[in-house]
Amino acid sequence: MSNLLQEIEAQISGVKTLVNKQNVGIVRECADGVAKIEGLTDAMLNEMLDFGNGITGLALNLEETEVGAIILGDYLGVHEGQEVKTTGKLLSVPVGKGLLGRVVNMLGQPIDGKGPIKEDAFYPVEKIAPGIIKRKSVSQPVQTGIMAIDAMIPIGRGQRELIIGDRGTGKTTIGVDTMINQARMNKVGRASGDKNFRPVYNIYVAIGQKQSNVARVIAELEKAGAMGDTIVVAASASDSAANQYMAPFSGAAMGEWFMDNGMDALIIYDDLSKQAVAYRQVSLVLKRPSGREAYPGDVFYLHSRLLERSARVSEKYGNGSLTALPIVETQAGDVSAYIPTNVISITDGQIYLETDLFYQGVRPAVSVGLSVSRVGSAAQIKAMKQVAGRIKGDLAQFRELAAFAQFGSDLDAKTQGILERGKRVVEVFKQPQFNPIPVELQAAVLWAVQNNFFDDVAVEKIKVCQDMMTDFLNTRKADLLTKIRTEKAISEALAAELKAAITEFKQTYR
Amino acid sequence: MKITKQARRDAKQLFNTCKVGGLLDEARVRQVVGVVVAQKPRGYAGILTHFQRLVKLDLDRRMARVESAVPASEALQQSVKASLAQRYGAGLAVSFVVNPALIGGLRVKVGSDVFDGSVRARLNELEASF
Image (cartoon, rainbow over all chains, first blue to last red; front, top):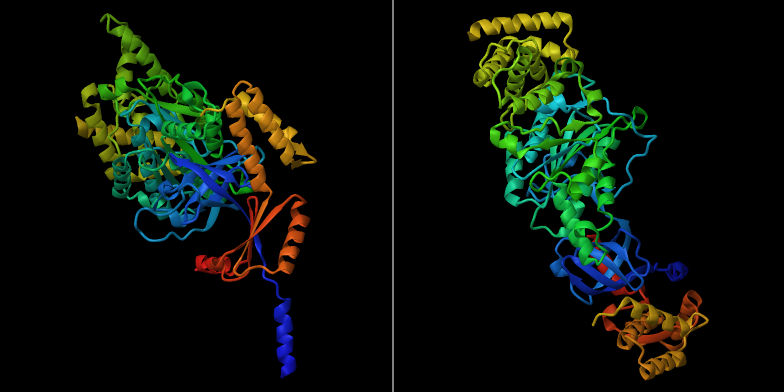
């Protein structure tokens, strides 16, 4: 027995406790969510720092004698003389389907009081965008449900389309409408049991907004039943600038998970001008040199590396996509300001919303002349291409002539025709908010406009007539709409059927 | 007080001249301070302030603090000093401190590196893992 005890003793003495090496520093100053830390000789750029008590930081500035770090979370708990440790990790957020239907903060922690989140994985917040080899050109549409956009400025999966305009012109509404339409299409697609159907998941990133606005958007999404397919990342105006600056990146990480796993996701950054302002604040407090409008020199890189992460990935790499709809606010319609020009040049097109149009009652106030989609037309379904091909040009011509026609009344028949058609198209494109229109219905209505079915309806009656026609098609000709949706084109047979249906409606309308 | 870029640069240059074989030479540091105070070049207050900071950071870097729960024996002190010299090179100022809060084991801090083998640290780790 004594032998055994000696053996155990020998074993115990042979066991060595491992001592781990840590790199620490001392907080020298801390203000405005930014800490200057002395020591931390091994800190790496963008490394997560542990401030203790569950507060994390991010090393952004590595200087000769100190490290500048932003504090994520409550920076009032950090004080001078406190010890900070390196972690050797990059900042990561939880990702996966478990986040759908939830409201989270920049770190992916739930803030909706619905209990903990079951994540599938953790993704680094800053990630290099997919390279050229992995990408594929845009070929599938994202239906926004807004007629003016789907007809004239089509968006494809994997595209980055900027929504730009003054305050109060309905930028957020376009984003919310698009999310609601995705949720509706997902519901229809799932119910149809089509194996090739690809749902689109939404991510809404609210940056520097009033909490009440975020709550309103969430309530609107819940009312429309769209919250189940949506993740809301909120960094509201009361969150620190560091959180506001990082929030879009965490949202992008959550979207990338869908893309990497062969799914389609849509992300809305609302809005990037506030993010740029938050980044400017962080940079100035970190004493980085400032440039134009006091923004730091890398504010372009800030947005380009974020938006570059939206992509359409080829079949070999999972066939997923991440579509981005960044929102930028302009001041007094000035698109040539610093941040708007930057983001315009990064994105694949923009939807410009005009204050004048908005107050004339043209809502959504999409300015046809200044809006463009550089890649989306390749993704438009054939039915839409057939009916909407000429509309953009027609409308541009109409706007030009409308200004001219105000001075005189004696116009030739051709000009008169363009003006009458233009007025009707403008009326048809008016649409109430949070009420997206399915693409087959859009195609049918536009087909009717193009084939002169609205020419004998007075301009002020167009909307009423359109609504009645919509009701008629939805209730009496649902199979026709289904055919358009599944065939995705208006064949000659379908055109004849459509003509018969609309003629029938016109008789009842009279 | 605002220290100008030029003053920082000068201080850094002076600091570099004080190094002999990569280590800071005390006599030279004193000499430099004496000369600067006597000659009073432009912005000398700023130069000296920054110089002091650089010297302080260098001293911190070469300072080893060994904490133990009970006073360390002479043999232990020698072995710790030897292994630290092996790892960080010569010129390390090693100080030994008694800290009963550690309960047992050693905690060694060299510059900003910490080797924590104390019972307290392991208990904290255990607590955090729950």
